[in-house]
Length: 210
Ligand SMILES: C[S@@+](CC[C@H](N)C(=O)[O-])C[C@H]1O[C@@H](n2cnc3c(N)ncnc32)[C@H](O)[C@@H]1O
Image (cartoon, rainbow, N blue to C red):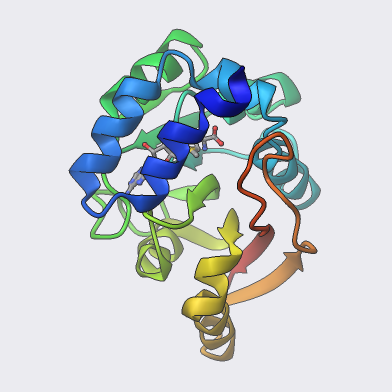
């Protein structure tokens, strides 16, 4: 059953220590990821899409799907009227699946968490679902996303509670106090995969870059 099948890769992804381990794990998972996540009732892309669409008008461009994976969100952004979306992910295998969907204007195999090779203010919106979580990317990944998002632009992301309580929430408050972002929305905590054994909640955030 899907239930026990994808507990393996996800649990391993959360426990991964090095970026290359995370990439290898997702490379191996890439071909069955969409079916597994669908079976688990995966909610992050839907929540992120709702938040983005509430704060960026139809046609806003360009957007970056940061940690795009197989491109679930890219497909939905395309359907709902965002014509220019680039994908970034650390896993070549996941990006290969995203490429097959034919909805991204560029694919970047890069790691979040350090310096990104994009100009200041390059994007109008950034969306990052299921990436700010255990074993993936922490608060250290935020500064670069803020730098490459233009003033007035929106960053939508999900944050796992473990990260939130370990300093992510405090970092958001600090960025607000510094006048770098405004928290325009924060969802209540929700479980991202109701069909999974992992029931640690996450929250969705929409930040306006100032
Ligand atoms: C749970 S998946 C989410 C994928 C997609 N956003 C979705 O909602 O279906 C997490 C993704 O983050 C990527 N990832 C993990 N660590 C990363 C990093 N440091 N930089 C870029 N991508 C990373 C993984 O390769 C994987 O595709």
